[in-house]
Image (cartoon, rainbow, N blue to C red; front, side):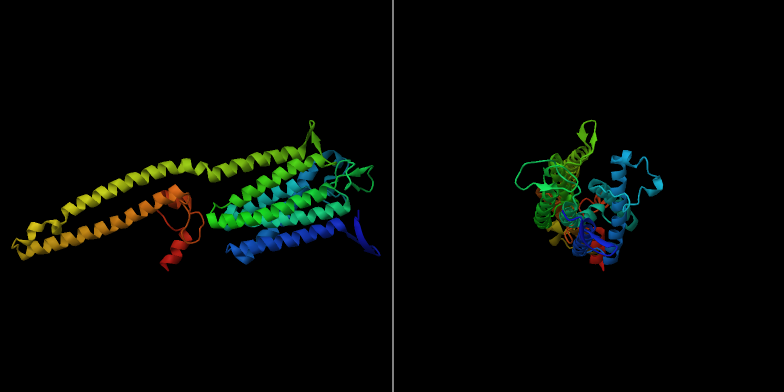
Length: 364
């Protein structure tokens, strides 16, 4: 263990602090890069990262205080957030605090929460992989006693222990690689916004739940490990979200599909009726020596019906297109940018092909 990498006079460089800083910088860069790739404003991304750093830190400390409250009973509340004097942060707390910060930022800037969340996951996974190395060097978040050949000694503790920090770092790295591939698949298959985020949450929770068995510093509540309970809650939540994103929409689309089918039949019937009303469809008129006024009226009637039929024909194409998208699972996706079209827009215009932003650009 190397809790202090080196010291120069009164100055000491702590391994945990160094790796936390490296993790934050690396994660921020990856998040910024992903945000730029998804065409978010760079200044807003930087503002978002600052908000998330603050809310994540508050969440991490608040969670730690709640789970270690007895240790702080003899300490004045004024000093509860003095991390350097009374250290202690929680990973799950940082995730919860960060989620609150992200929600606040998305509402303030009127941006898609799920799309922003998709930008976050790569940075979070890589940041955790780096941060856990700092925990290993400092001896914090240590494992249970074991006789395995790769067991390590922890300063101040009896017996060799599981290097659970390395396990967690490797798990985060595997998730990072998996999420990179998943992002490419999501782009090709045009998954809904937030799909990558929910899958990350599922794999993260699963790894945390599994590796908690090897933790030697776990906090218990009524005989159960608190972090395992939280991990289990997030596993269930992520499964529900994945189900809603990939399965539940089919039930929602059923009434829309029925409405579009009905509109398709009605449009086809109206076009057939208009065809019969068109004066030019009457072949006998060619044999008549009709007055000029009559011919003018027939011409006007033909042009009016032709204009209506043209509009109905275009609408019919849009209806057929929407029905096809429902069948192949791509209904509600903008044909230009691939993002989800706002549900309010789809409610008014079920055959919408573009999101509002792309529609405005198209009009310009």
